[in-house]
Image (cartoon, rainbow, N blue to C red; front, top):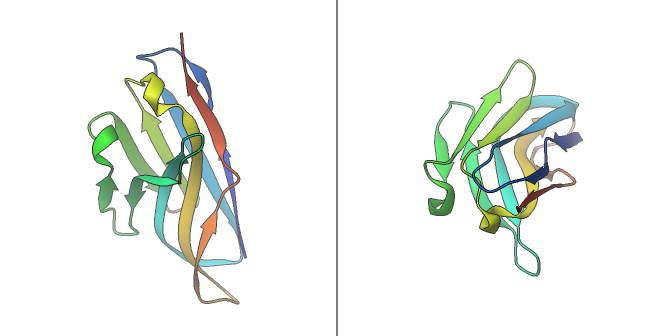
Length: 120
């Protein structure tokens, strides 16, 4: 199994920045795609950004140019640098990985979520 722990969420003013971190642990053999999703109140979860093990990134149009995803393969970490935050970015942000463990095949794992609130 893979455990994901997110950190870095909180309250920030419009125009401000936050950096989300997600640590993956467990019987990890390989982490393929790592990413961030968000869920607005009453809405379905949606893609924010993903990064492959080769470093290829994909971003939602709504955050293009404001958010940057990165990963540290040595530490099994993925980050989301969020700049120029807007009130409409307020949501619960979830870390997601596609991983192979030493006992299981390729599976999808989710973190518990971290709240990001953008408000003055």
